[in-house]
Image (cartoon, rainbow, N blue to C red; front, side, top):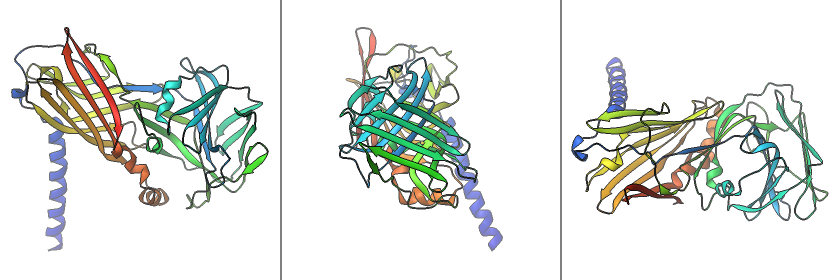
Length: 384
């Protein structure tokens, strides 16, 4: 009886795997398409913002009169320039940005953070050491804020135990109230600052602020709620767009297509950075929207994934064609699926549900119309 039960469970598992595989290769009925050949358009996009390293230090339980957290970031790329930037998280969840003159940050990209950008200031850093080494963080940063108050961040880890970093999708999108894109902050080699064998302080205007602490130990060690990554992969998915769409080259090797009669359906789109890439995969393949017959309503699933270590986001898509044009909606309602073997992380994700659930509150919608010989798109994100 036991053998029969095990065999039955195994058969169900095989059937489930087979069904999923078949769904990924399943074709839409060709009856949804018009009988003509048309160019192909892609209504989806990723934007990569290069960044070398980042650190986030919270003191929400012992806040400043204005700030509750500080986030140093270091850049060295043709887009942003080379130098240090510090995001100062305010009590009203807006952010103030302080940066070196050698950087040229785009103010529009900060609306994905909290309640958006408050102020941006170019400053001279009296000290600007920010390194991440094998034994942890070394930061010695001093600058003056917009009220001419000295701000000091000092962290020097010297723990004898080897770090055990992991991959994470940061829940940055949870704080955004009016996002212009879906922020995918994929943090490789991510870890928390260890309390023991670490010298640290955050002072604002001469007052020391106690740093928040992680409420559970990790890898047998108590941590601060100060975390860092020497290898961040910063991506925004489907930035808000209003304007014309240009036809896509089918030969683009970042795209994987599936031919269905005369239609070209999108199976996967990739964006490639210096060290990492990100993939958007559809199941079944995304239909050629400008080829659809009026009255068509298509539904399917999608997945966003960069690497095994940073997990994946899952959701559903819907495409509706009417006399007014084409409506597309993406709902990441499956949330984030982390992959970890750390018991402490599994416990953290089960208690702090924001980590896995924040993508579920995002909805992307797009209206497409054929006007004056071209396709125009009006897209936006909303929180639900």
